[in-house]
Amino acid sequence: GVVVHDYTLLALLAMLGQRSLEEIGFVSTGSALIYELHRDPDTNKFYIEVLFVDGVSPEWGPMDVDIQACDPPCDLYQLLNITDKYYKITNWKEECNFISRTA
Image (cartoon, rainbow, N blue to C red; front, side):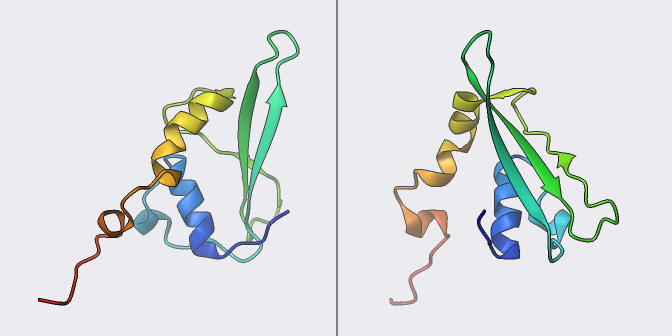
């Protein structure tokens, strides 16, 4: 497993098309985002299921995360296409809305 900060978890949820960060606000300590990779034995195609565990839920059971623009089960390569824009950044200044303070 990997331990990440709450803002990283929020960013990963946003990448999947979940509510905006302003709506989500924060995630509780002990929350988790679980990515499961499966292979369909009939087609040999890979697909992804994503689960979220809310750190304050008394049941501690994982909830399915709906991936925007990808019907379940979400094809691995379709998910990679959806999230491609988040990890193939070529202009960090533009992406981060960097404004030069020098005139």
